[in-house]
Amino acid sequence: MKTSSVLPLLTGLLALTAPASASEENAAPHTQTANNGSYWGLYNSGAVAAGRETVYREIENLCLTTDGRRYFGIHPAVGDQPAFAVTEGGALPVTIGPVDASAGKRHYKISNPENPEEFLMMNFIAPGMREQELPSATAGLLSITSGEEYQIDCVDNDRIVMMAAFEKSALIVTLEDGDMILREADTSSASRMEVRGGLFSSDANGSIFHFFDDDRRVSIDLSAAGLIREEAIVLESLTSRDSAVPEVYFLANPQMLAERAPTISPETGSMINRLSTCNHFAGEASEDAERNAQIKVRWEELQCDAVPAQYASALAAAEDGSPLKTYLAVNSPNWM
Image (cartoon, rainbow, N blue to C red; front, top):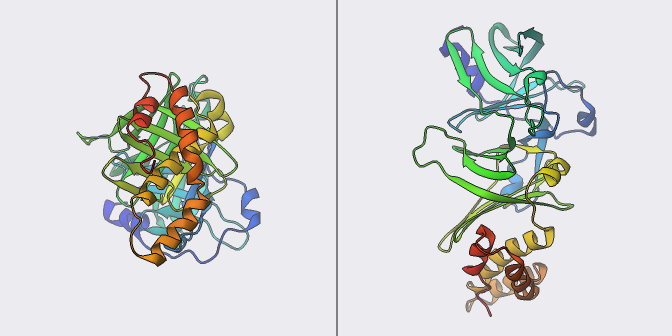
């Protein structure tokens, strides 16, 4: 099959018509899946604009391309709902073929239900080929091909514990020799971001990865249950603050992360996130009475008045010379 016939399968649009049902949680996987984590695809993007929790469907796997700009995952058939592929262009109905095993590999044929001659092969490394002492959190999806004429390579290694894709970019977190490292997925970029020394925290709401680079901070707040808040991912510096919600993401098992990754207490992690927002609100006060009233409500919800004491305690406890200590030293509460 030529590339021109593959592209409609990867980029065509089909709106999702129904929310995930409880039965989906027990749906049997049709392809190779992650043993130590879960994949999620965005369902109701309108919730982001409304400031609500964003709901995702659980999918079986995820090919995030090595340039970070495309992705392909599988949602299995459930009840009378057909299987579909989750792509950066929308959702596509697909037919999933049986496994074809070769030496150290597993292959699945993913075809167009209306034209079986249009198909792709999802190529996985067999679970037994993974390194046993590493997290091996992902499903081992190496590439998607169509014969010898078309191939896209997927981001995968035995150390990945988080992947998140946005409209035109993506981030990955790896756990390497006890160090958590944040990188942009685009391996061809000369200015590819890389931040080491990440810290992990977890609470009832989700899992948070904290990365500090001098005065800059990246916070990644994701849920293993497919519910995340509007500011799921925050990229912040002294002069700017941007937030984003991923279209798809992978998250390793939080318990495994808590056992293997460098950690920060949930209380300190919460304080850092609140400190950032409280500093923003403190500088926003104006003569607009309505806006000031809104800020006051959020100020109380965030318990901003309690932040300075918590900040002082965290600053004193942070290890000298650590990225956390450096970040806190230049990001004190600005309303004191």
